[in-house]
Length: 208
Image (cartoon, rainbow, N blue to C red):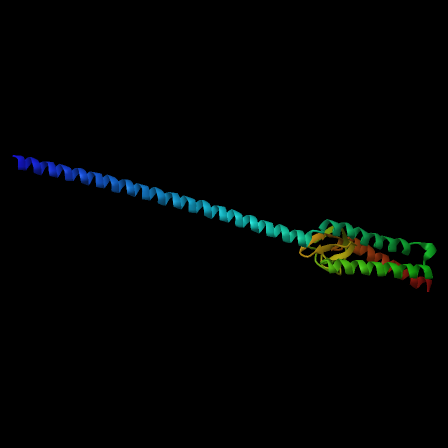
């Protein structure tokens, strides 16, 4: 009897030990899983933080480059007013009857031309270029159409008149060119012109 009881107690003890071991193993596994989850979560947070820092660095680099390349954008735009004023001054002098064909006018024009050339040269050195307009197809990205001009010799939408010069600063539009573009000649006006020309020719032949 005693032997049987001893055997039973031993088996009970071994079962208890196994239960303790399995419980311990389970708790260790749970701890290990929790640790892995925490590590993974930390890695994800670290990766997101690094990505955000990298994005901020790129934004900062772009802003720094833009500030270096286009920092004088507003100043450059204001400077164009000086170029416009020179053009207006020359036009006003050309229309001044008291100065026409005078030596004084020629000297003034020479001085104004030198100043204008210097200003354009300074602009070019700072990556500011004139937009070519005359003879070009209208491009709404760089041209602003102010009027339509009947011209049968040009394709419709071709720039035939430049009202104000446009400029680019590197790859950015500093200001658009204000232009006049061609349109198809109206048949009525075309016939009217032909009639006027024929009448003028007849009157000339009659005079002769």
